[in-house]
Image 1: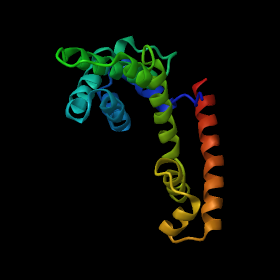
Image 2 (image 1 turned 180 degrees about the horizontal axis):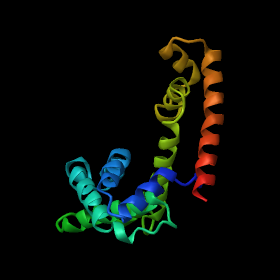
Image 3 (image 1 turned 90 degrees about the vertical axis):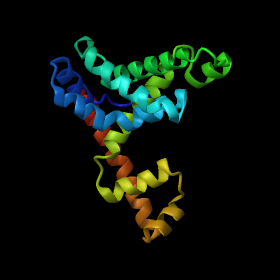
Length: 184
């Protein structure tokens, strides 16, 4: 599924290209958690923080090469993917099952990069929902709770959870569409 472009990410990318140091901080604050999760899938927890730091160092070093016509999150996760692969290559003594690796990342990693970029865009949009709607959607989709379990956890009627989920999903779609239109 192709989600809306990340307008804030595009803005960060443009600011980075103009060597705005606050843009690097903004990029790190916004994307570090999902980039860390992404690279952990490749290199494990022990090396993930180092890969994360190298990723953002490379983002800063190559900021002038950012193309505003492409999604910032796609560009960012491509850099993260390359740093993770570099780390794996440095492990000369480790044998990697290539069939297993292809199942995980696809032949060139683009599918996984796009998935993580889309996830970052969705999390950005979810963060813009009113708290009561955001909480219900996070519990449903990120924690995989049923509506009945959410009602118990939040101590609200089941009908309230259903209404919040419905309104939140609708509003989320509006946020994503507005972001997509603004990016065009």
